[in-house]
Amino acid sequence: MKELHFLYEMNLAFDRPVEKHRFTLKCVPCSSSRQEISKLTVEVFPKEFLSTDEDSFGNYCIYGYSEGMHDHFSVRVEGRAKTGLAAWEPAREEHCIGMYKYQTDYTKPGPAITAFAGRFTFAPDMSGYDRALAYMRELHERFSYVQGVTDIHTTAEEAMAQGEGVCQDYSHILLSLCRMEHIPARYVVGMLMGEGLSHAWVEVYSGGRWIALDPTNNLVVDDQHIRISVGRDYGDCTINQGIFVGQTTQTQEAKVLVEEIYSPE
Image (cartoon, rainbow, N blue to C red):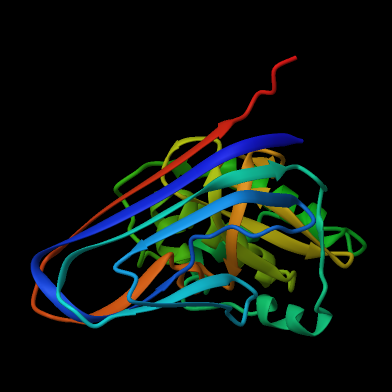
């Protein structure tokens, strides 16, 4: 178990003022059986009309609307997280598991993913978790972490075909492989110890439990990760979605900082 201080900041600048800005933010972590969130502060600008609710995946969402003209938009989330409280999370709504069995536009396999999966032969009684673990280990060996060669629109098949990508691509590929085996699996956005950007990993359903795997780092998620949101793929977990009136060019900057809090002896 660790106690972590986390900070998420996102700033969006417009070269010309905009108005009638509607937005949805998914950037606030919540407590679960695996993590306990405390001392949470959330700052949003503009904040004329704000409300909060859960989406259909159980994620904490901030819904907002700004009527007036503004030339920037920002959000700052800070708090503490006790992590590693449990090795897995119970699946509380069994009737919702089915939607994580099916491929999406991001995860639909093609020749490259099918060929990769074809190298594996699993025993009939092998658990979904153990199959996912085998896929993750091989994926980590054969796929390379390279920034700038993919973007938020890249599919699992496209990334696998070129053999390079980032955490989003590792996660989409592992989702595709699991779903080919009829293993329910979901996409996760969160934060990882260190300084940089948000991180993505996968949770696999096995034996009534969600077990988290980080294919980018080839490990079972432990006390260095803070979960923010889950969904079928990246599209369900987009941190900032919005629409506004105005012809402008946007410039976005985001930062994540997660560091361990050490108590004096």
